[in-house]
Structures are given as C-alpha cells and as structure tokens.
Image (cartoon, rainbow, N blue to C red):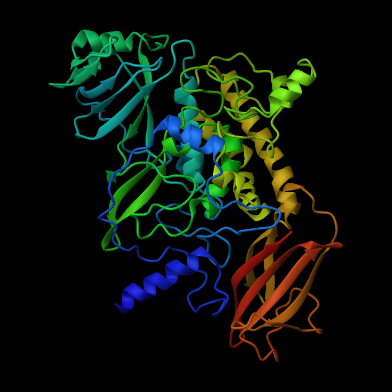
Length: 535
C-alpha cells in the first residue's frame, strides 16, 4: 500500500506543479518516470481513419491554450524535460550519439537473415504500393513495404531517414532496414489469405505474389528494393490519440495535448515534413518491465515524410494547408485566384527519389500537418524551444550521415536532401530559439552557474549582455527574498541561511524573456534542481 501511494504521488506530480506543497523534493530532478502501475487489463482498440480526420478537422478536442488560459506542458521533471519511460528517452541532444549510432537507429543490428528463404505469411494487394509480412530463418517477423513504381527510392528513403532522426530525438520507433532481393528469395507460407482485385478473400497463390511484385520498381540490376521493419516488442493494443488520456491505462494521467514530447513533435514533424503525423500512425504495445505490464507508446509509418506521400510524390500544398481547409477559399474567390499562397512558390529538384521536398519556401511557424493536431496546436514557446534545441544539435556532418543510409543511387539526390534538411534546421533555430532566452544545460562548476548560450553558439539572437539577480527561495511557500549583494554568476552560498536559491537571468533590457534557475544547497555544495522560463 505504501508503494502504491508513493507511485500515485509521483504520477500526480507529473500533471502540474504542486502549489500546496514543496516545489522540490529530495529526488528532484527525476530522470525516469516512476515505476508503472500494472496495465495488464488494457484492451485493444481500433481507430477509424476517416472518423479521426473528421473529429480533428471539425471538433475542438482536448484542453486548448488561449489568450485567457495558458496550460504549461505536463509530464516533465523540474528541469522541464520529459522523463525516460513509456513515451520518450533522452538521446542525441543530451548524450551525443556517434555517426554509427545515428545510422543504426533503433537497433540496426537485426536485419532479416540471408541464410534461408523469406517466408510471406500475409499480404495486401490494395493500393498503389503493396506490401506483405514475412519471417526469416530466425523466425523474426518483418513488415515489408515498397516504393511507388514511378518513384523508386522515394518512400523507402524517406522512411529510413525519418525513423533515424525521430529515434535520435527520443521517440520509440520501429527498427528499419533496407533490403534488396529477387523474387526467388521469397517463399509462400501455407494458408495465406489474400484479397483479390474483386475484393474476394481467398488463399494466396505464387502467381498472386508475382503479380504483387510486378507493381513495385526494380533496381538497375533487376533486384527489388524494399524497406522492412522488425515487429515491435509487446502486444499491440491500438494507437494513441493526441488529446485526452487512455481510460483503461492507469499510467496515462497527463492529457496528451499537454505532453511536451507530443507538443514538441509538431516542430520535429515540420522539419521532416511529416504531414501524416496523426493518431493512425502510432502504436501502443503492452510490454513487461519494472515488475509489471505497461503500455509503451510508439511512432510508426514514416512513408509520408520528406518529399514522399508514400504512394506518390508530395505536392506543394502538403504542409501548407490542412487537408480540409476551407479558410483560404474566400480569399481565393475574392482575388480571382491571384492571392497565391506562399507554399505554392515551391520548386522541386525533379529527382524521383526526392519528390516534393525543399527548403526555400519552408516557414516553420506556418507548417501544418494534414489535419489539426491538438498537441501541436497547444505548444508554447518553451515547448518550441525544447524541440528546436534538439534539432539544432544535429551538425551538418550528422545530418548527412543519416541521409546516407537511404542509399540513394543518385549522389545529387542525397546531397539535395541533406542541404534541404540543414536549411530547414537553421530556419527552425532562427524562429524558435529566439522566442525564449535560449540558455540550457545549467550546472554548477567551481562555485558558478554555467550553461550553454544556444543563441550565441548558433549565432541567433545573442545581442546584449546577460544579467542575473539572486534570491533566497522558500521551498514551501515559493517566496523569494532578494540577495542584494549577489550580482554575478557566482553562487552566494555563504550566509544565505537558505536551503534553496533562485537565480533570475535575462539578456539586455528584455526582462520578459528570462530563465529562473533553482539551486539546492547542501552545506557548501550547490546543485541545479529546477528551471523555469518566461517570455
């Protein structure tokens, strides 16, 4: 009972800051979510794609931020960071990954075995881009997809690249591999059901498999290029939504529209042009860990990223307007079509493997997915900063290393995608790093507060000197008592008579964009325990 109450208290603290109790506890800042409560009773669910479109396009879902109501992100620790757990894991920004690690992605060391046939255990024939499920000699299960026949390397390249970036950015994603094979590599399992062109379900034949492979492009040496994803660990229980909570999951207590990792995902999606970032492309699975069964939340299906629309190349409208966006129609009618939207000026390079991807017309704060996403719409400047700082952490070399794993046959296409991602990265930094005071990675070293000035490091909005004032901080009441004698970044430990200090930092005359850094004192030692941002 005692452990249950402790877990409940920790989970409650994840929703919003407590106002009637201590602001900080002895174990702050938490790096990991508390041990999960058992969720073995969660049932599988399905989400209708068309209902999801209508629901989010025409209904205002979730609690929304507005001019009168501001709801800060939940599910974060006292530093403002999501904790390692079911939704997110700190990766590249926090612990720089090597080029090899960035290229490997979620695992990178378990491709389909080549010492035997690949056995097709299920297949789909509908759509322009068919696919199937196969097992290898290890009996591992892989989901197989292909490029549209008119755009070789487009969808497979986009998925390989975007999955690596999203993994490095902290999300749970499938383990992806490029494959090349001839039809003779495939065997057909017994009793594989197949829906033919007339919609009739029947046993699949070898001719059906050959017909399916005839719909996909071939490489210059006659092989077939595809992408496989290893089956995600755990029992699938359906997608998550970008608002509300899952009622049968005892650990899901932070409304999804307020989760920082989902709000910030809107910026990552803009960078990668992940217009299909919606509930249908997520997956919850029941997994074992920490002595219980709990849900892990995954992002899946990245075939509609970069210039790919999965089954074709993107048009300029993608990322510029919602799928069901009627607000622009009156303006077009009133101007007889002469009011050309900014996104319509996009020009694409003409590479089939790149499709509709570019950077010149990209405006990060105007980018939108296919239809409204409550979490994306709820983001605040500190959510945007959290995402932008991670994107800016990718160097040119690291971006190009990830693009290389797409294995584009045309070096010019590879170079173009790398250039576009770098340009889009820099635009994101210029827009979102300047909406707050972009200081981060606070620590105490040799008696002083030290930090990274990301504005200065990236050459963005770093004009004017930094100023700091110190206060004693009452951890129970929140009251601050100024320390008039402390005027620089040296920690005023001696004679404060307090267990906590607060340092308020701003640049130049802009006191609105400020960061308050909270320190816990233990004897003569000080450690950073919390960070608050204003703008």
